[in-house]
View 1: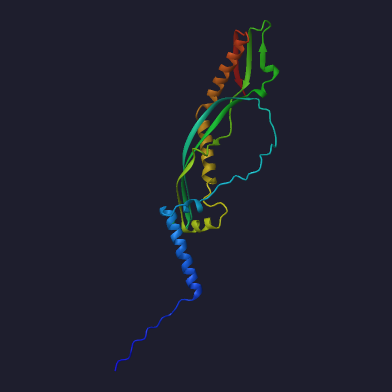
View 2: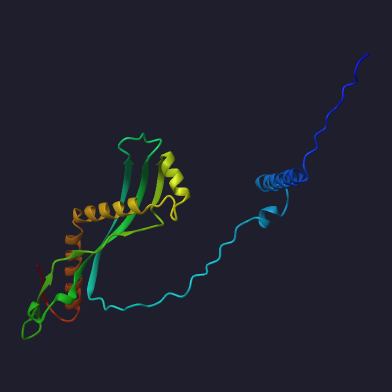
Length: 220
């Protein structure tokens, strides 16, 4: 005599069924958004950007007396790597490849020109001007033309980004790019170009005012 086989059915708890149903619904919804097979879902779960910034506050006004006579455009590829001494790069370490593009202005500060630096003859046909040497302004990084090409991070660095207020911050490579652009500007002859342009501007201005001879020199 054979013993009938008894089927044992273990029913799922109610809360488990509810969780499973919710997960199934979410999977279907996100799949629909991903594949765009459900009309309207993409708009329903899309993001919306709102600018809630307050008005800009004017803190100070400064009179400018400098003549911006030349601008240099620069680009630098920054390869910044940080390694841990006793850990492999896969565990701890970062390497960022960053393209930095920016400008540097060269100017002559006309506010430093005193009365003794300008000499005009009696019939106002000849003028001699002594100006300070041209100087370089601070490098300005252009965010629209600067970007990170690649970022490599170790496991610990990736975990640290999860708890950081500014994950994947690029301040270090940006500062390095600004420094390199400033160094390149000093070697570019930009100040000499600014002095030449300033001389041309002043000669043209004074000639239009009736001066026949105009001499512009530069000193410390």
